Length: 134
Length: 74
Image 1: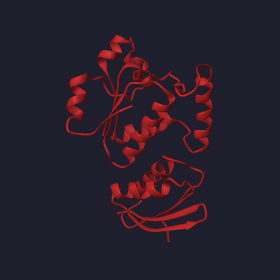
Image 2 (image 1 turned 60 degrees about the vertical axis):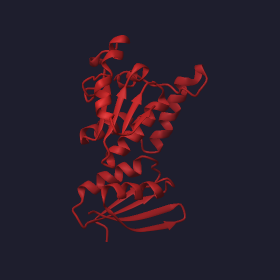
Image 3 (image 1 turned 120 degrees about the vertical axis):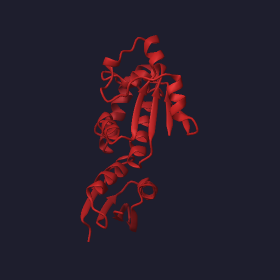
Image 4 (image 1 turned 135 degrees about the horizontal axis):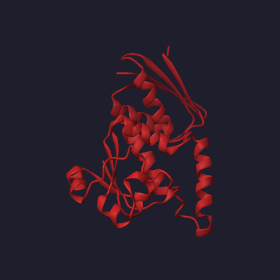
């Protein structure tokens, strides 16, 4: 399955984490193509905020959700993602053009992120398969 | 009976599935994993996982909130 991630919210980040790692565990190839604001999610220092909350509460709500998710067993989403990537079924592809457009550098991202690709690369990868936009 | 017992009580999606897959990888063909969960979502999720991995769900026991799956590695 192929996903386009264009937003940087906590909700989209967790959807990406849960679907990607679960698909990986089920031996389904899970390709994620990050573009525009979604690229921020790949940065090591980025802390996503909750989109569905009023502006002053977005950051605090993310902290609260994180705490509750820990109780559900999700200690660190990036640790789960790294394991799924290492297993070989989950792949994270940044979009080169929007990286340049938004001045986001490869060095700011986790080292297990794949090399950036372009539109043709994503089309080639997903042609004939399922594409979901997050 | 079981070669490995996995206690996933209190864990919610996607953890029971991720933990189950990890433990199944440690087993040899024919060995049995006992998985204990209390996440309602796991009732559907665990069979879906096994359908994909090709491992066998031998038994599902429900005891109140607690569900026990006996899974044979194929």
